[in-house]
Length: 545
Image 1 (cartoon, rainbow, N blue to C red):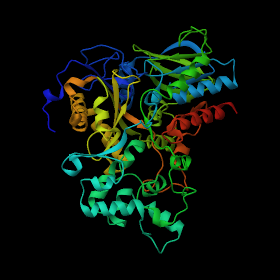
Image 2 (cartoon, one colour):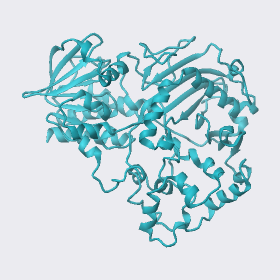
Image 3 (cartoon, rainbow, N blue to C red):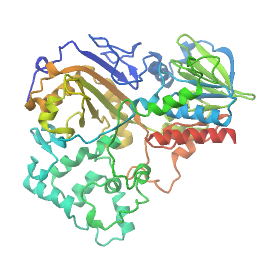
């Protein structure tokens, strides 16, 4: 199906929203104030906390580029003093404030955040794909990979319906059902070490000698969880998460390999790995903690509260002094300062060297090495979900198109609007998780909103058009969330040769510096909610012991 922009509905007057790391951006990619833009119908975004302060991104970028201080003017003391100042109002920052007050109930705490709403990465919260009666999962073997679109429902003998070479079908069946021992001369430990040297794509092509169609079909299997495809996903973690091809190795399935990444080790034995990051989820935990820390009906920044949340206040400097630490933040007009007995930096690790220039060189280098993986989410409101039911699918993995996952969130009652959630992974996987994330983030920021909307409409039309779906008629709203700094980096083979024996850069990066401790999921590092909380509690423990 090939439709022109007008047929796709690009000219339709619907609600359109575009966010970059939680900040509203304009059609030209510039930061704008306010939560809505590019829309002809104004209404609340369908998915929860999102900040909109212009300085949320512009100030950190100006710090990075050396453009902030020449124009900032002298800092102005507020006269405020706190027992603890937390930099970052995401899950880790709120957890740090909560844990500090649990230990020191009479303490005064200030939480500073650059957005105009709390949330941080919790705004990308966790979405669980639940089975829907009558709907199967599917794979769209798309024209980008195989020259034409073929939707394959993952029901009985689905391999036989794949639009791939016959040899590739036979090999895929073999890899799934009865693969040989690819390393017959090696011990179990030697086999694991060999897998740790390979990506999953390299394993399929170089070790298994698989047909290229097999690798193309499997390439996006890792995207929904890791933010990059199998050209960057390690073979040892592919084994640990049940990808095809490893059963003949005779490895112990009851325990992970020491080479498996921390998340694979932690989730070993779980039967439900279908956890995706979408808006609404971890915010429930965060909101509960916030509600427990502020008096009823008090504002977030009320002097009456034990803990104050000061939003739209990007921190620009943290200095440890003889009697107290001094924290400077930009209030939209000038730099204001507060004094603190302790400071917890619960922000991205790569930002910390710009806030605390006095850190030793080795620590600044370690902090800067934490390159986060970019992600792209979209939520599309449809008039109804009828076309999905006619297609017989609920969740569809795409093998090579721009959006690698599309999933129906069905309406609670017939006749009500349905929502579709889409995921794209901008990381240039062929470059590896680190360099690929840097390149992918750059491309993501430069991608015009119109291209994103066009790809959304095009792929939904290709998927659902045979069932009567009309993108011009049936799409009512689109919200795009560009998370340029999405997943926290995680140590994994084959990219981090020091793993699992160490020493680990995160250990040097999170080292306490006087009254300053470092939290955030980058400090673990792992892209999990529990990592953010663990890092917060560890930072509190370092400062109070």
